[in-house]
Amino acid sequence: MHALIVVDIQYDFLPNGALAVPMGDEIIEKINRIQQDYDLVVATQDWHPAGHKSFASAHSGRKPFEVIDLGGLEQVLWPDHCVQESGGAELAGLLDTRRIEAIFRKGTDPDIDSYSGFFDNGKRKNTGLAGYLRDRKVTAVSVCGLAADYCVYFTAMDALELGFDTYIVEEAVRPIDASAYMDKRATFLQRGGKLR
Ligand code: VGL
Ligand code: ZN
Picture 1: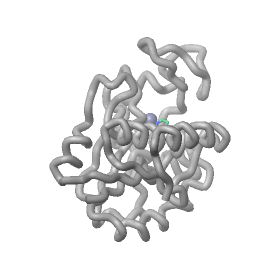
Picture 2: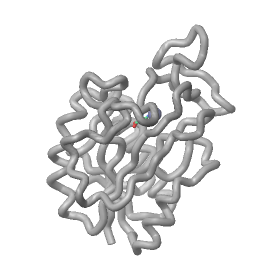
Picture 3: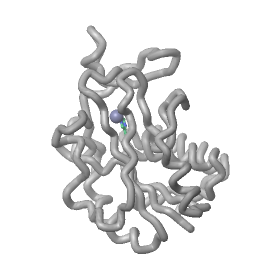
């Protein structure tokens, strides 16, 4: 069984969103088109409480995109985004959700960020995604969505580590920072990840 994991197709990551990913809207129709190629489709949703510690606004004197130490981990500070129940946190209306069987929320702990759909950044909490996929006899996963250099990359790296045959669907991802993504993509390939 081969699953497609659709990462964070939410208004805040689209043009005019709080943390817009350049050309993020271009991939939605691609994601709609490729869903039919998979046995199972699941999605993730960034879902932060107001005042989340990954927000620059939660740290006095800090600005978005500065890097700080947060509980012993390097943390990029973001503009407020994907606040629970806000419009920006909703999945994009143009995304075809009919085949999405489950949505895994992440970033709900106020004190730690969570890029991967599987675990928070400190690997303390598990979202249940790995167990769900194993119960459904999934052995291969393809990852698409936003942003290529954060949530897509960390989801794909955890999938590899968990033993899934793992692909990034390159036509269906877009990065926040294209050159940073090229380095991360190289790391993913080095660890045995594949592209499709
Ligand atoms: C993401 C930064 C902060 C992502 C989420 O979905 O890639 N990036 N929160
Ligand atoms: Zn976030």
